[in-house]
Image: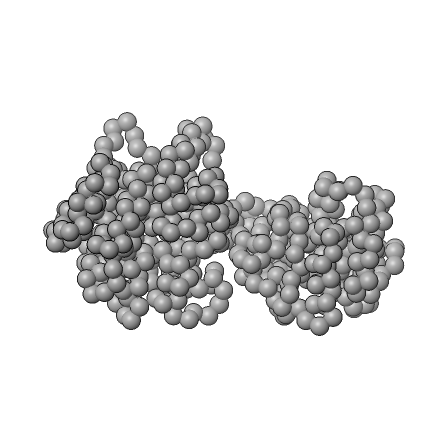
Length: 488
């Protein structure tokens, strides 16, 4: 279940399921029942306030309230609006509720030991304001745990943005497949634990929607990992050329460790002569060459992957080397200074992209290179990949990996410890090391982001960038044994 459905795709999945013979009334019953089961599996019977909105999310709330009451839970139900104004399946289920329907106000929260938020779902199209904002704030001020249905009220299901104010949930129960807002910040932080329930929409219907957005994880790319065979040698695993600077020398040294730990067979750091001794002494397995030999070395097809950016310096020299590498159609990873060097002429960079190319900007570099694109991070990353012809890793706590063909992966491994100098350089190196072994650009980028995040999560507090490459052997070993056993 790695697929993420957009809001229109989720509506279409409902529609096709209903056309296939499962009524909307049954789907709503199944949705409410799944939330009820989640509640009863987590909490003992207690006073529950179910807060219902005027649409289908509110209809789910009527089901939840009815089922909890049938199991002996004391339930209060509040509705935004009037029952007579409900339509379709929500009206059907509202009429099955035999209790009082109260007006939806903060008074509904008095005495509640548990709150169920069914006010607005993922399709919210306006900001939460006025009296409703007061209600949301009151929910967040109370100590009672909150179960949100679909998404917490106020979270935009398409982008994770907060529409005015939003409920902070302990658990969010959604249906069939997650929406982007479950994994994009700040919505990700407001959902609490996210549970995706099966309500009867078949995998075949999901597949027929041709999803292009995925949760990043091994089952998305594990089959593409280029594990070495018994007859492999170092040249089979690729030869990385990493361009180093003379000032910020640690950046490429960190990237080189990431590339080698990711499996690159050989790696040569190119730098101006004054810096060569430092790079030569960094690690016995790293080769060095003067930067003046760059174009010569690029003529050798065995040098099949190039990393430019970490510590390279901003300016004409870096621009020329990037353009030359791209024209040679080598697998290229462009990070940091390689991207900033094209701030004034991004179209020149995009026009030069030919082979497998991955760009790894953080938000600031992204804005300098792609300008003030409209939309949320997901929309902007997809547009940037299409415009540039490269796979774009828009780095952050909710890193997004976007391919020019429209595929997108959202990383859900939360590792705040990665907010440390040099962490991004290691990530660029890991991507390069995987590309050198022949992995396709999108899959290599997704795997690198996952390895990077998982390394940060596993290591935890105290992590520095140098720790990340050393965590890779254990992670790769886990993936290797999973591949051997046939379980991803």
